[in-house]
Length: 256
Image 1 (cartoon, helix red, strand yellow):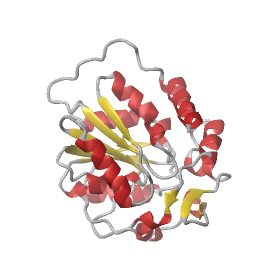
Image 2 (cartoon, rainbow, N blue to C red; image 1 turned 45 degrees about the horizontal axis):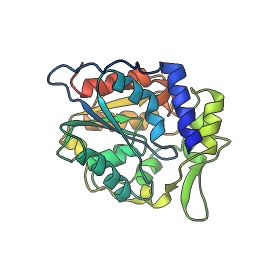
Image 3 (spheres, rainbow, N blue to C red; image 1 turned 180 degrees about the vertical axis):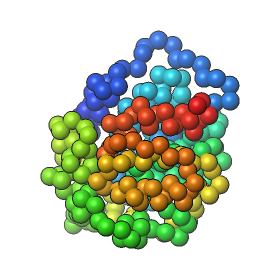
């Protein structure tokens, strides 16, 4: 795990530049300062390092949730714990599977707005499995496999091209070999809440996504009436397009 964190830190530093060591700037009045970032399946919280570095350097208080990936309820509980620890209004951000998580946790009174990044956005009563089955399987979905305990990963040989095609090849290979498995039951869990009905929402659509079909992303965004930003990125656009993703989060915080 230390190697994964180191790799992600090196990527964010090399691509986006290290955060300055000087005193943090003060955000304008009325801007939400708290940002909670929730990671998706197969990766951990270090997937947000590039975005977190950009926002922290601008004066935001950034918290990256470490999801256990054992169930939807467990991931929601971890996210709510992070939200409850915030000292005021918070922008809640989810990537991929975490779109399901923030849809549930987003009802938390601390949450002022939601940002979905290449993410599922089910309505109440829906499941990821049913949503995925409603359209053609992508290269990434076809490569998902279960181990003997029912935990899901993506075939390492397919992972770099299907998930991280716009990251350096060695980074994609490293992430493929150090995946964080997701309990297969999570995809079948029926959602109880869809916070996007009551919280303003933003959506970053990844046009080259080979895991979550961009057409599905467009459907989610339109159904939510979200403010949409399209990036020419893979499913890993939170890393490859960190500047654009951070800018959308700033918009959700009221800074832009």
